Image (cartoon, rainbow, N blue to C red; front, side, top):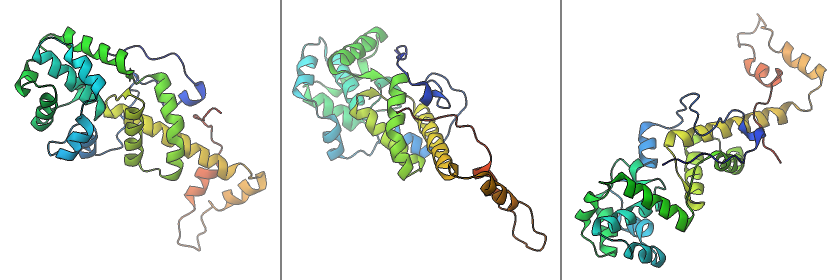
Length: 251
């Protein structure tokens, strides 16, 4: 179902992030438990959360009502609801709690069991997703979406460089902008790239006004003093050594 990534891009943001469809290396910023929690619907989801995320709007009910067959109506509705939360396509979800299916089916006056007959024709599932994208403006995560999200996330990362809050912010932004959330590993790679942007920006800010004499004095701190037990200041070399900025933000 994936479409070609948009050609709109910003080369200055491109460097270390890599294209969304290129897995140059495996990036793991989250634990297995965190990954599962962020990419699925919890089995113990509360009634209030179900109502908040999965209450269908009048325009959605109108489109669903035009479909033929209970299984198609409830399947289409569940595709919409998966995009509501957690924000991915239906086939990306490992499972869907019975309570969620029952709540959605009740809204369209269909037996929840009809949902399990949905998807026997893969073409139907794809056609429904295309229809949803066309009507409500959902779009795939691609090159231009990655650049846009990275630019926004940089400001959050400057205040808090912990991966989990940044991944959560990225997911929230994608849901708000109706970007279909890709695999959680892709989101981790986005955040990893943003953290590299911030890291290099910080180093530039710390060293931009250092003169040659400053570098020499800092380098002298790296020379071990045999009369002192403390190790040399290895961190100083990290900040003062010439560094090429692989990733910057345009504008």
